[in-house]
Amino acid sequence: MKVSKRAYLPTVYGEFEIMVFEEGGKEHIVILKKPLVEPVLLRIHSECFTGDVLGSLRCDCGWQLEISLEKIANEGGVLIYLRQEGRGIGLFNKINAYALQEFGYDTVQANHQLGFESDLRRYETASKILKHLSIGRVKLMTNNPKKIRDLEDYGIEVVERLPIEVEPNAYNYNYLKTKKIKLGHLLTKV
Image (cartoon, rainbow, N blue to C red):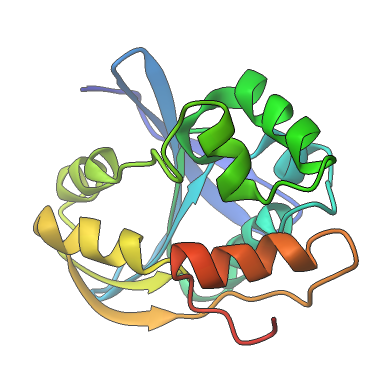
């Protein structure tokens, strides 16, 4: 794994440091704000171009990213931005999945129609990054129990799970409901 130097990054959310970890041809971004006191506040965020960049209403990703950055800016912590778009199927296939959803498939069914598992994301790279940063205990902002299991399987202790829910809207309600029912996400608002 290649690691960049740390650089100062002022943002609308606050002042951070930024680093890049390169592994397997992908560049994963780490944004951190000191103090990093264990258990460290952590968000592992999988890339979502449509939600994070374009402000899509079809998901909750962009809002989760914003909430995480604000919380880390205020309390200190780490955001790991993993380059695994569309639950690991890539942007091209994610847009094809969107097209299938317009014909009544839910997000899981659309992935299956395209020949993919429900969720191909893995969190081993995140655990390697945390170990590089000498972080072994975290308070994880997530609704995804798979993320917790994967981190713990790779030797990172998740001391606490902090929910990171947003209000559903007309465009993402069924998506969130599918995440809760079919993927086991810990959501209370759907």
